[in-house]
Image (cartoon, rainbow, N blue to C red):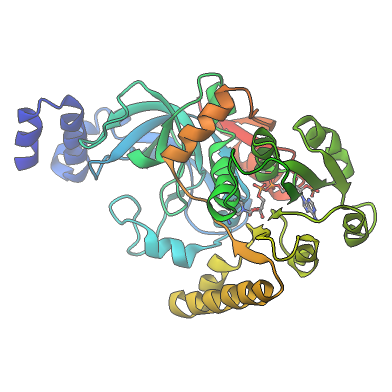
Length: 396
Ligand SMILES: NC(=O)c1ccc[n+]([C@@H]2O[C@H](COP(=O)([O-])OP(=O)(O)OC[C@H]3O[C@@H](n4cnc5c(N)ncnc54)[C@H](OP(=O)(O)O)[C@@H]3O)[C@@H](O)[C@H]2O)c1
């Protein structure tokens, strides 16, 4: 009630609404009143109740509508979402150990299980409610965001996101187009800019190699590096070469037609390699970097979460530290930098990305769009691999 008094004093109708909704949902006696109109507390969503194959995806009309628990949070009505490899992996239980440790019991039930769990990381939609501390957004704003994997996902009618994870949607994009970008764009941004140190001022003349150029991350990475005037060599399958050429790639290598190392040997060395493929690539890729010039190899495919799934939190972190440290050190002595990169949720990076989009320097690359009723089909498509850009879900 103290909180309500403060809301009244501040004449903050939005927070009062949040308070009341929270109060109604958490107080069974009041909720009883509300069950006469179930639409006020529940929403449609795709959830999982256990980890497994695609059959575990379940559509429900009765997922609790999320509520604002912290003053910096925003509720977004989801217009479009997308599917990324992490959704398929999380459906199968990938990362559960570490993600459960990070999950907030106020938002996701963790005692006795994290289920029902909503997948989907990208959202483009409209702000419905804002917490007291949210200054930059108001109800009605069209926004986009990528939600961290320890939070409830976006394959639902509403999602709660931290205010610092949200950004105003690029004006030039529809919600469907906008939902294709945040997760892959922020991951590429983290690898290229935050870890790789590349930006619009230092890319001119730099030679970049992108392994796995035709998927979600790759198609964004080509465009941002070309916008910053780098020279981009894209590695992809032959049938994707036209797509990556259109996005601006200067040189294209078909990894299926012959030996990769032989093909790369005929080219000049590189200043930066972005590896979206993983596996054995790091056993040969780093020799194509210029030595002793600050050249960097960054991979997005790391054993970080898998180590914790296999070994538990403490041993998994120890194993990760040892693996990363020893690889970085080994390559450092050979004159190049070896790094891992991870997705970073950030509204301010999305602001920078929205600017590039509205300037026409980045185009969304959407391979297929599914209606909300066909989320399992979208997961199957993602699972089959060979993405050519993104798979998007129209939620409304
Ligand atoms: N560390 C993180 O936080 C983070 C965040 C996001 C993504 N990731 C990881 O980064 C990787 C890329 O993500 P994404 O969203 O871009 O995936 P995606 O959309 O599924 O794209 C992967 C692309 O790589 C191509 N490919 C597969 N094998 C290849 C090879 N040997 N050489 C060149 N291209 C190859 C695939 O097409 P073809 O098979 O037809 O060639 C596909 O176009 C995934 O493994 C994902 O899990 C990590």
